[in-house]
Amino acid sequence: MRFVYVMDPMDRVAPDKDTTFAFQRAAQRRGHRSLHCEPRDVYVDGGDVWARARPLSVSDDAPHFSLGSPSDVRLADVECVLIRKDPPFDAEYLYITLMLEKLRGRTLVVNDPRGLRDANEKLYTLHFARHMPRTLVTSERDRIHRFVAELGTAVVKPLDGAGGSGVMVVDKGDRNARSIVDYITHEGTRHAMVQEFLPAVRAGDKRVLLLEGEILGAINRIARDDDVRSNIHAGGRVEPCAVTAEERAIVGDMAPRLASDGLVFVGLDFIGGRLTEVNVTSPTGIQELSRHTGRDVAEDVIAWIERRASDYRPRLDSISPG
Image (cartoon, rainbow, N blue to C red; front, side, top):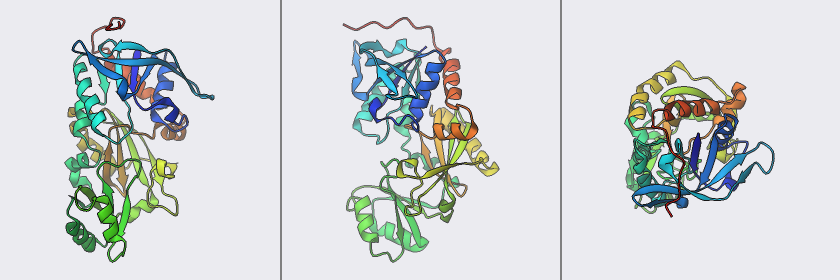
């Protein structure tokens, strides 16, 4: 099978951490061919969606990857397109999802382009507010300050952040509070999310990885002593952990909505058993999970793609539009 990865440049990938690299390595081991393209390489010609893509091979040894010569590939002719561009979800990301809509019903796309457009990783979580800590979304600075005063301590974060970027803790009476809120809301012109601070964060921020609503496993991310953010990108260390019965019940409650939105590979974040985020654009953590379980969990994802790709009719070899 041929898999096309719409993603960032390969030289930005961390081979020992990146989930997309783990997918590519597992697919290669199972005999499939990987093709790499950046969002700018996707285009529409003759009413169909194409990509200027390059054959990709990966290795655990440096230099870790090699790219072949580019060619024009009609994306309806490959078995799967994986949208693995890292956040933020900007205008170019939006345009890519709209173009990839041309593949609906023709080729497997993970995650579904429409689902990606609908699922801002902060706001989508509000569909499951019953499982969240107390949360406010507003651009009104005085409303935020009243909320913080009521709670005593809160976490403020931008709606378009990723990897812990822009996440700040604000305390009632903190002389920096107004400056922080001004910064996050761009002087009251942009919405921000404000959540109840959960002291359990010191024990870790749990990432639960799902595949089609089923739990693949979980890792616990623990912040450095000098930081409140537990994200791996922000320097958090990773420990093995189990998924509690309460968390499994939350996953079961969420699974039908995730499935209806085409969100197949998803990362849920839990602090103290409370849901804080639903990560859908480029969830990570599978390499850390694999090290803790002693097996390559990425193979589960590739095996699922193999099964689902058979739902689509056999494809012919791609040809250039020119």
